[in-house]
Length: 271
Image 1 (tube, rainbow, N blue to C red):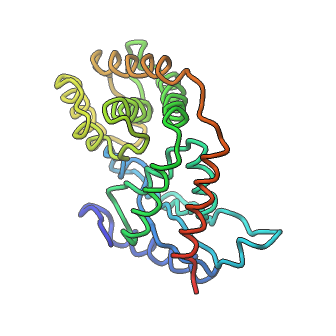
Image 2 (tube, rainbow, N blue to C red):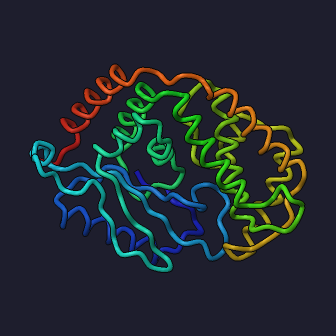
Image 3 (tube, rainbow, N blue to C red):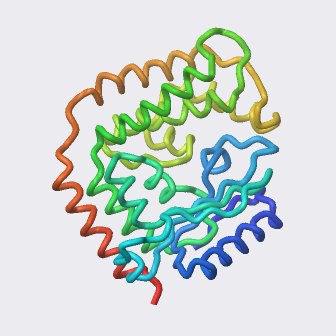
C-alpha cells in the first residue's frame, strides 16, 4: 500500500523511494513497512519541516542465527531535508516488549511510502498482545514531561510551538489510553482527538495552534492558550498516579514476544 499527502514534495518522495530500494539491495533485507514519522505524520508540520522516513526490515533467517549478528539499524546519510533510517524486526519486537510505543506508532502512521498491510496487522497484533500498558504509559509520561519542561509554556510567555506540540502529543496519547484501555494509540494528533475527544475548547485552541505552525518556520514561536497548558498538565498528573504501580512479570511477556518474532520471520524473511 501507499498513502501519502498531496502536499508532499514528489521529488523528495522519489529520493526516499530510491533510498529504500538501495537499502534493501545493499543489506539484502526485506522492507515490508516504510512510513513517514515526525511532524508531518503527527499532524502539525511547518513549511520547512524535513522528511522523517522510518522503516522496519527483516533479514534472511540465517542472519538471526549468527553469533555475531549485524547491526539492528540501517541508517542513510542525514541532510537538511531527509532523515531515513530503519529498525530490524528483532529490535522492534524487543522495544515493543519493553514498553517503547514507537513501534506501534510507526505501524499506525497515516503516511505510508510502501507497506504490506498484512505485515502491519501481524506486528501490531503482536504489540497489542505483549506490551504492558503501564510500561507504555510510563514511556509517554517520560516523553511528555521532558518536552513540557523544555517548552516553558507554563510560564506565560511566547515559546517555540514545536516543543509544545512535542508535549501535547504524548499527553493526548495518555488521554487516549485512559479512554480505550489500550497501549497502541494512533500517531496523528487529530486522530487521537477523534478517537478520544478532549473538551471542545481544548480542541479549538489546538487547531488554532496547528494553523499557526503551518505558516511559520519549524522553530516559530507563539503564545499558548491557558486551556492547553492546563489540559497538558492534567494529563501528565493523572498519568503519574495511574502508571505508578508494579509492572507485569517479564518472563511470560518475553516468551510471547519470542514466539511472535519467529512467526514474523517465517512469514517475511527474504528467500
